[in-house]
Length: 319
Length: 319
Image (cartoon, rainbow over all chains, first blue to last red; front, side):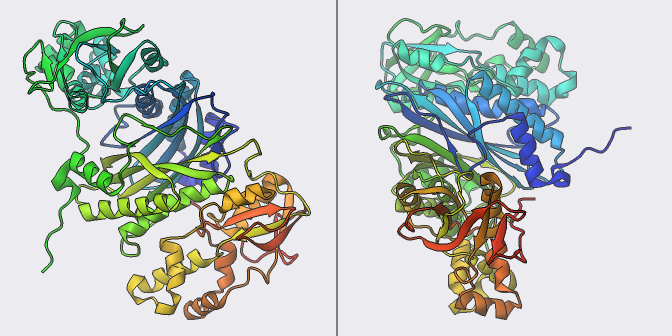
C-alpha cells in the first residue's frame, strides 16, 4: 500500500519555501530582492522570461518533476545564450494546488538547481503561491560581456552560412511518441527522442562562442525551425535556404516516423522546443556548430529548403 | 445591448502580443532576450519576482485591469526599493484563458506601462500563454549603485529608530470593505482605503534616499506589519518596539472599523500589502519617512507595541 503523500498544503508556505531553499541554497536568496555579484567591467544585463503551464507545456505523466524543472531553466537559458550572453541567475515563480505533493515541488527545485548549477549560474529567488494549475514562471538573467553587439534577430546578412548547435526535430518526435504511447510504452531505442522533449539540452557557452567568433545573428529553435528562421528572415530582410542533406531525418527520426506513420520532416521543419542554437556567420563555423544552410538576398520567400518552398511551415503557437 | 467582446483566443497569440507591445513599447523587447542599458559604474543588479493569481491576489469585480497591472509592478518595485535600489526594468509573464477579452489584456498592459513609466523604468519583455486562470508573473530588475551595502533584513541595530514611508493598514481595510460591500457599494469617503488595496502606491526613490542617508535595514510591508518586522527582528536579533501613537488608526480607518465592526488595529498590525517601506536608521529620519518605533536589544519578543505584546501578530500567508 502506498502511503498518502505529504502535500504543500499540509506543511504550509514557509516550510515549502524552506524545502525548496534546502534543495537550491543561495546566499543571495531570502531578502526582499536578490543582489547579484559585481558584474564584469563593460558587461550588460540580459533578461528573458517564460511561463510553463501544466497540461499545456508539460504533463506529469510524461515528465518527472526534475525534468520539468530542468526544462524550465533550459528554455530560458537558451534565450540568454541566443543573444551571445552567459546565464548568471534565475528566479522561479511557482503556483501550485495545495494538494501538490511536497515531493513534486522538491523534485522541480532539484531539476532547477541541477540545470542552473550545470550552467554555473544560481537560483537567487522566487515566489510560491497556491493556484488551481501547476504553473512555473522562470526569469533568467544573463551577462553580455564586452562592447560587441548582441546576436539579434535582425543581423543575418546575405552570403553568411546558417549554423546550428544541437538536434533539430528531436523534441517534436519525442512529443509525438509520448502522445501515442505514453512514457512507459515508448520503444527503448527511441527514448533519446523522448528525452529531447522532456529535458532538452544545450551545452553551456555555445552562444558566447558564436558571438566571440563572428556570428552576427542567433536564435534558438523554440517555435519551429521554419517559424524561427522565418522570423530572422523577416527581421533581417533576407531569405534563408536550408540544406536538405544537413538537416535530413536521422535513423531514429526515420524509425519513429515509420512507427507512427508520420513524415519526420514534419518534426524537423515544424517542430520547436529543441532549443538548438541557430546562428548566421560569415566566418568559420564556431566550435560545436555545423552548417545547415545559407543566407540569401531577400526574395518572396522567407525560408527555402534546397531552393524550394518547404512543405511544412507552421510552428508552435501558445493559443 | 452590449457587443460581444473580442477575446485573445479570437485574435491569437501574435496579435495579442502586438497589442501589448503597442501599449507598452520598448526597443529592448522582441528578441530572444532583452539587453538592458549599460549599467552605472560600480552598480550591481537586483532582482525579485512575484506571482499574482486571480481569485487569490486579485478579483476582476474588485479591480480594473489597469489596477491589476499597476499593482503587479508596484509590489515588485517595492521589493527593489526595499534593498535601497532603483527599479530599471520589468518582464511580464501572463497566463490567461482564451476567453479573456483583449480589452482586459490591454488594460493590464496599460497599468503595467503606467507604473513602470512612473518609475522611469521599462517593460522589456514577457511571455504569454493560455491557462485556465488569469495569472501574472512579474520579475523586476533594479540597479544598486555604489559600493555601500544593500538594505538587508539582518542589519537592524539596537538604538536605531524605525521609520516608515507610506500608509499602514490601509490596504487591509480596503480589502475588508470590498469583501463586505463589493466595489460599487463602498461609501465614497472610504474609497482611499479601497484604492490602497487595488493599487497601492509608493513614491519612487524612497529606498535609494533611505540608503543614501544612513538607513541600514529595510523591508516593505507586504505580509503584515508585525510579521514583516518580526522577520527583521529574527534576522537582526533585535526587538522592535512600535510606537502606538505613531501608528494609531486614523479617522478613515476608525470609521471603516466602526462600520464593519472590526478593530482597526487588526488591519494595522496584521494587514499586509501596503508596500510601505519600513527602515531602521541611527541617523536623521530620511525625507518622506516618519518615525514609528525603536529598535531594542533582543528579548523574548520580536515585536512589541508600546513595550507590550501586540494582540495581533498574524499576517498574510500564501497557503
